[in-house]
Image (cartoon, rainbow, N blue to C red; front, side):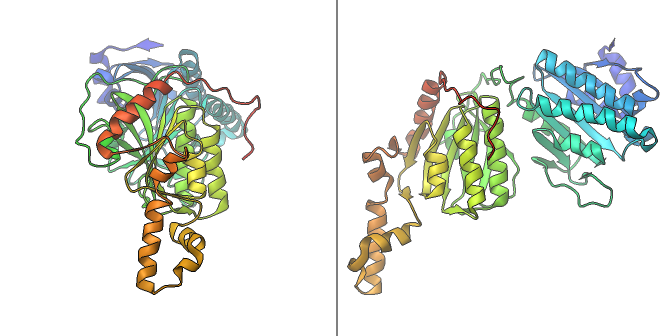
Length: 421
């Protein structure tokens, strides 16, 4: 183990790309390198160390493609295993920077054995400490499996993540940036929203700037949202802050939830729950594309014991209401919100029956009136299906109050190994 000062790191950064990457990542460019001379040529394959990012202890490693193509080897796998074990002991996040064209195949089964132990350790750390992969170039072979095993994958636009060179690249990135420098900065930003481990609190911001109340997202602190897995028109997920405290935000956008929406929502809710991060869900969706998707989202919200708040911003229809609002600790609705067991128009046709034996123009008016009264959030609140209707201007205060009271929430899950859904 060697402790390097700032001047030494600057000198080595000019010679070693991996050292330069870690220096850019850690506060002040300072970190402590571990196992620098372990194994033949291991220094050329990867650099491992620990330091601080925004004041939080973080363990990290970086492959160096300029030396031996960054190829994974037994020595490198053992170095990485050490850094994972260290992260587990001290309860610190693990951030891996990947840039490798493959593995040293000549090492055969010895390499497979070393990688197997590394992958097993990474899986066991899941839900214990946050794991972030930053793919800065090629990440091919079993190393791609290790990178994809992280909670969040940050990648550059030209990054390739695949098990085989000829296979279709994986598009698993939570964040995609144009170049290496931007990807490293994205990793630093993401760390500021995460707790060190599953027993620690998330970092709190001392300074809070309030948005003008215009919509659901304006309820959160200004300039604090970080979107993950962007690109879908039906849903968005974010980390944000409310009165300086980190929350997970799930926002549906008024459309049917597809396979990709289900995947990112369930993954995000499960991560937040594992690290006790409150989840605030904006509900505005007409349903799910398939029953399998509905089942997965329902399971994720049902299993989560972290504080859960639902805000109906548009339509909460059928299974969407059951999965999100039905499993919430507190539920609110903005003005004009609608709650219905089926699509509102269909519910109106069913419930109005013979009353629709009138001209079409009058039918539309009657249906609109039915939806605005019988299916309104105000009507649902009167029957106790939601806690209250809230004006947009009051939403921030109501969310803050609810999260404050839920901060002492205690909910014990049923004794079992894990869900089978």
